[in-house]
Amino acid sequence: MQFKFTNSTYDSELLYLRNTLQYLTFMKWINMENELNANTKADLISIGSVQVDKSLFPDQCKSTATAGPGAGGSSIFLRAGNQRVRLSINNLSPFHLLPENEHVVVTKGQDVIARGVLELPLCHCPEQAYITLSEKCVYDCQFCPVPKLNGKIKNSTKVQQMVAEAYGTGQLKAISLTSGVAVSPEKEVKRAVGIIKQLAREYDIPIGVSVYPTKDSSEKLYSAGACEVKYNVETMDPELFRRFCPDLSLPSVIEALDNAVNIFGRNRVSSNFIIGLGESDDTVRKGIECLVGRCVIPILRPISPHPLRNNVRNINRPDASRLLRLGGMLRDLLDRQSLYVNKSRTMCLLCTGCDLTPHRDI
Image (cartoon, rainbow, N blue to C red):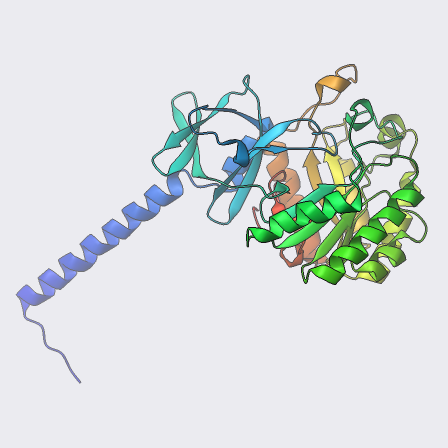
């Protein structure tokens, strides 16, 4: 079939197409102007906190950390499109969270930095029952406030109750368990194994677990029903590791990660790698190469200096440019090993709120 257009028809069609293109370009510009892209998220994570307007802040949107360097602090989750960022609540932050119709905006001075919606955390974070079993630790890692907090120990009944409540929302995608070391790593693994077995019988949902490893922890956790595991190296600089984690063994953690990959498989083993303890970029690269060469996915976690550890020197949260640089480095090294973060089903790699995550943010 052949169409014929008069000049007037052609001109009107051309004008319509031109106007449509201008409109779509304008709408794309509006949507992209304050989206949560890699640069914006890096800016937000480099500070890691926000002041919250009291008029918009429902308590149910607030999450309190009970594990790791950020333990004891409250935070919010902001989502824009497929990206998410977690920011602690701090009245001294240069960022402000304000209501805007059905959305919220993050501002710095007079400028809007990001626009999105607040996400409801289930247990600790959105879409997951992310539960700390022991909020105590006998190890005195110098960046972590947990040993100085009088945390609780959750029994299996409490964990079951928390998971049931999260499941009842209809939003639960994963169960993730983490733990300090209240008495010994062996006792923590044993308790985690018992709880995982109970949960695996009741829920057809992925279960991930992060504990301090023992010689046979991976075998036990996998047999119990966990599908992913995270053993944290904290830092891959041996000198810094001895300084900040004097009670732990970096070679033992790396050996446990090797064993975990053999049991859980590719894209199912990860490790927190803290950035901001004084390590060089070259150390980070060598550390990433060491881990991804073992098929372990490193999670580059910006340090969160804590008031209970204010006597520890040389802890500095990385700036946005360093986060982008190291995040791009991590993505490239993961790609070389054909490791894919977006295949992860639990824990930090599913959440992505605290970190600039390859294959999702960058």
